[in-house]
Image (cartoon, rainbow, N blue to C red; front, side, top):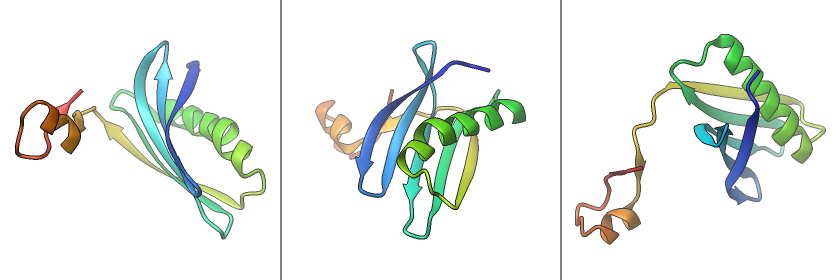
Length: 108
């Protein structure tokens, strides 16, 4: 199993977003949403080369280290997994800083 670390990127009263790193390199991200009904929903984005066992291991790490520490009494943890490649970071602010007037473009 890989040695995952999680770096929080954002937090609201009901959600959190984390970059997922292995050996200092970002390999994915997870968005976690806590509901008042006790169900926790997550969207997990992983590299295309992650197999089923890798995904299950990572879901277990997310559940144990991020979800259960925030909501130890959750009723269910539902995870939607996207497997693919990083296409870039799109941001209006970054585009404006570079003089791009179209509003958004790939950065990263």
